[in-house]
Amino acid sequence: METVGILGGTGPAGRGVAVRLASAGYDVVLGSRDAQRASDVASAIPSTGAGTVSGVSNEDAATRDLVVVATPFESTIATLTALRAQLKGKIVISMVNALAREGRELVPLYPPRGSMAAQIAFALPESLVVGAFHHLPASMMEDLASGLDADVLIFSDHHDARARVGEIINEMPGLRSIVAGSMSLASAIEAFTAVCISVNIRHKAHSYVKLAGLDE
Ligand SMILES: NC(=O)c1ccc[n+]([C@@H]2O[C@H](COP(=O)([O-])OP(=O)(O)OC[C@H]3O[C@@H](n4cnc5c(N)ncnc54)[C@H](OP(=O)(O)O)[C@@H]3O)[C@@H](O)[C@H]2O)c1
Image (cartoon, rainbow, N blue to C red; front, side):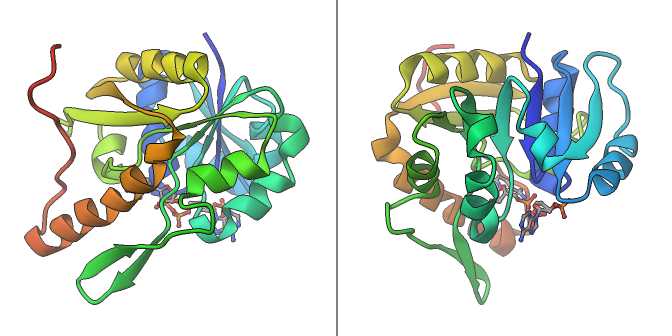
């Protein structure tokens, strides 16, 4: 079983993924620009009795077997470029969305390569970049009693890495992985997050994606 590092893991998105990975038995480290802050945040996460959650620096988190990127989009590429050596040859999961708030809506932004996942793949040419977790409401992810029963669309040009990420997601309570396809779908999947959040704002809800019509 891999150990997992989460860059920017002190935010709601990283914490939510950490809780459900730990619940599945994975040992997880929350990375931060400030290791003490990460340690404090990790200490406040209730133990699930299976895997562990602890806090370290982003540099340390990037040395783990598999790494999740949970930083704001504006700082993602600078953060990853500094960690390129540690991330070489590893699966790097991007859950990063580039979005802007306009009134009651979120609208998608399009980085030069069309998506944040593609920007990350360009910045980390020797890593195996997989996209996942984009549409999940962090508050429900962090609360194991929230009743979350969501689908996670995953995409990558690295088929073995994508398959491994899918297996891991299927072990996480409340989640089912669905292979959407290649990196070509990244911009559509990331942009759809703007729809999800706008619906949640308008309807004062924490809805999530669940596709019908697929075999279990
Ligand atoms: N929130 C959700 O429901 C959700 C769901 C799916 C995907 N996402 C995506 O996941 C990512 C993180 O979301 P979030 O809501 O957790 O974001 P966030 O709270 O704004 O940021 C996450 C962490 O990133 C670090 N960070 C902040 N500014 C930084 C900078 N300039 N340079 C380096 N690190 C910085 C901070 O950790 P330290 O201060 O400890 O370093 C912060 O705790 C985003 O790209 C978002 O689109 C979010």
